[in-house]
Length: 445
View (cartoon, rainbow, N blue to C red):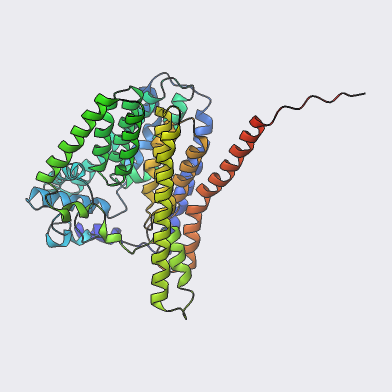
């Protein structure tokens, strides 16, 4: 059975397979849009009713067998943990399991200790039966996605768009593909983010930092939200909550350091060193691919240009991040809405402009903020455009050197950028119209 599965899951599908998958996603997106237009005419009184309406859209990707190798990587790390082998101190290829032949990466684990616990739970089922273990993990993803939909519903309790946005979130093609069909752990990170937003709405401020740590211990990205949460607490003079948050942070770091991440090398494993100097579906990739069409250029020169570009984009993001954080101190009142918007913007800019290695499911973390932050339409539309465009291209595209991959990458990057450019232009015109005095109506003879 393992050999059959391995034949079915080639790491880089051929052009025809890739084209078929892309067409499937385009078809799903068209159905999604048409179905939403129809459902926008209806209002649903309860989340259970919404769940029943969306059930078919959720069940189909859940039942579909994963078409990426990532889930095998997760379960292999889980088997390592069950065997008493620390996956942060030992590379994946140093441990032999029934899944070893499926591994796409040989490095140590890049996923946090909370994710590792989930991997171990599913790996316990893998010991009995591989397919059962895979579907147990997918079942956890399905449960968390449904819970995430409920959290969106709860966060929008005062919105007239409550049921419509909840449905749009639950059946979003990117989420169905990456969170349910392929079972990426980003569904758990989205859960931590939505819980953060819920506690923010409920003014349970002492739990905000804990939710950031929860997200970080699942996947590294949420750590960039931590300074904004502390800034929010400081600017609103939540001294008691700041104290609790500091103690929470110290406790989390101590517990994790004494258990799963006992060394600097173990912590460094979370930074995903395997993708260092790799590019895919990013501006970094576009530059790398473009330079390959200059055969006369020295390899050292190309590497220097790529390194310079990476430094510039990193510094550019750092500047944007710093300015955004500084602006919070210049506001008369830094509100919950401001915090949500800032978290969304820095996450979008990081993934879209400053990350060399971008995978289709990265954009999924933007959708919880896009769903509940109704005061930033440009951010919401750019996030939605990025989520839909990023999954038009499947594995094997947006890397390597070919015109197809270059066009694929442009297909991913251009839609959100178009939204940002035109959205900013419209906001500028709207602001100018507000500042301009209204003209007196002319007298007609």
